[in-house]
Figure 1 (tube, rainbow, N blue to C red):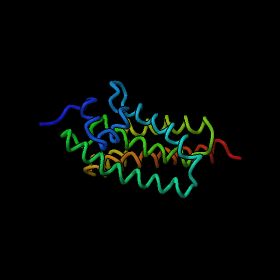
Figure 2: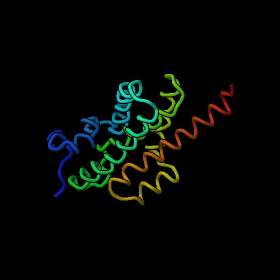
Figure 3: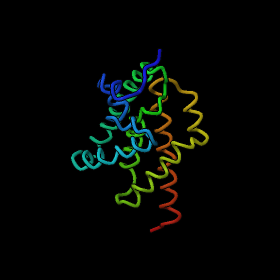
Length: 163
């Protein structure tokens, strides 16, 4: 029988707590958006303290950890990609924040684009969301959404805002 995704479930296991973005995924409205917002303080805390290479290693470790915790939480819930599991949004958006140019305009634009790609799931994102299973599937489609976000921002920077 599937478990209910509530505070008791989230607090019952460190992996569940991580998969649910320290509780952000329990938001009744737009848990994916709330979870994505959690990436901002993570970024502001970690980025100034780590070299670029260390930050990339941290992202890889967070992705691998996410595969494991999202798989476990999804199995425990009986729903492979439960909407409250937001670690995938956090990690994918950290990639965006790391790669966009500095500044609020880029970060906010990245946030809005990432949410649009994650919610609408165009083309390849939808394919990976429906095809890949388990924790890897949960994490990977958001990474593809981050890629498309960065692609649009790169085109915007190159075509619309040439230097």
